Image 1 (cartoon, rainbow, N blue to C red):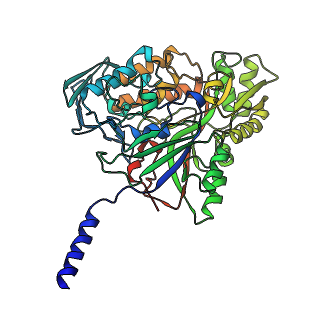
Image 2 (tube, rainbow, N blue to C red):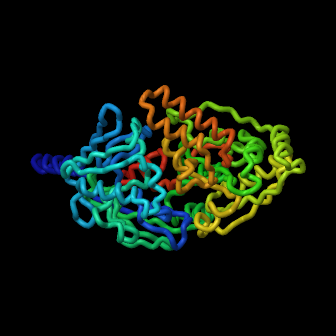
Length: 492
């Protein structure tokens, strides 16, 4: 009997040391913002990031503290002037199709982004790269056209996933990556099924399957969470938070982020091609009040610069509402009786209509007559955004350099406000060449201050993310979406 008990105890101890087999299904939604153009190609405009983030890896990823940490690269170093960077790669990594991850795959993946013919929005994040070379199977050298001390930050971009060499023509449907989950079926407008990758380098995932369901409307996604059809919704409002916290079936994560929501005014069309008009429409906003009305107080006031509150380069600015100043600028620009503005929104982002109506009431005092136009959620990004003169917009957080380049550089593909300014472009170029941190920070701060005076984008706040989660879900990191360790999640 004693021997039997001892053997049983040893067996139990060994079982506890061995990771449990993946089990259960975790379900979430995506908003179908690109409709039929949805894709598994991480660098395409239609990429469904709720899927690509689970099936593909980067060289460098944000850690739980937001700082760069190894992913498929284990280490990196630069030469003295930061124009050449060398990355050591993780050995023994396999793609889902069984092929081995090597330096040639990194060369291919980055060159594919850099190729002007690829027309990728991710290109602006790494356009300073002039060459990518495999020094051996596990070492890659990246050469830049300018000194850039923050290069690892750029490689954290959520679109810069590593692909198998030569897979560009098929990746949009296969999703062949190295991540913790593999694509079983891809159906952007229905349910995409992902299955656990037992050979994932950080260990087998906690769940056997993930389902990513296309649900375009924000309210419909909330109802799906409440009804048990999905297990997580990463975009609930402060009002919805009250509903969820009142039930033991749900938990709510409160996550400060650099994600922002706002209104973009195209600077290439009248009357917003006049800097006085576009400054006036931004001065009319009471940002403190918008944080309260739209976010229930769960946000941080921003002064029209897209840099997150905890970024090392964030500018310390104030931007109180100034109705009289706005009226004076409009009159000076030739609009003494004010202007009429159609603001296009959709419920694919639940807070957009509330933001537009709240701004409508605030701006009226300055003679800015806002008409809120509700648009369909399906295809909003392809049919409304960057098409209409004024539209709601949103961006996920990015390092300061990347955000400023990708949103406002004259040649940036997703320059949504069509902001073309040689002085601003020169500041960005100077910032990347400057190796002294304090001097570099001063340039980034100056660039943000310049936007606060000249841009065509109203950025009233950065969002404190409220994530509604079913109580059956365990071990979901309470961090920004881009840093979540998806393989850690388990479900009861």
